[in-house]
Length: 40
Image 1: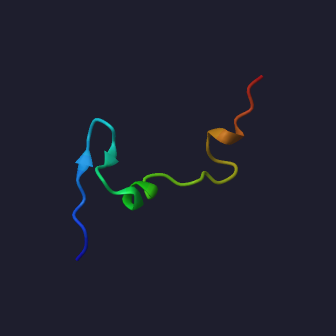
Image 2: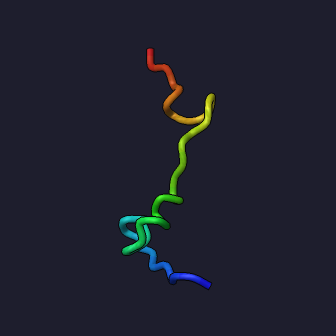
């Protein structure tokens, strides 16, 4: 298949795999997410 992934539960990232870690988050879409919250 491909490369085996090893998960680090303390850091919550894959060990020694930058490409896999890129897929752990993505930009948030408007109007969802914390970037669009207005603080009074």
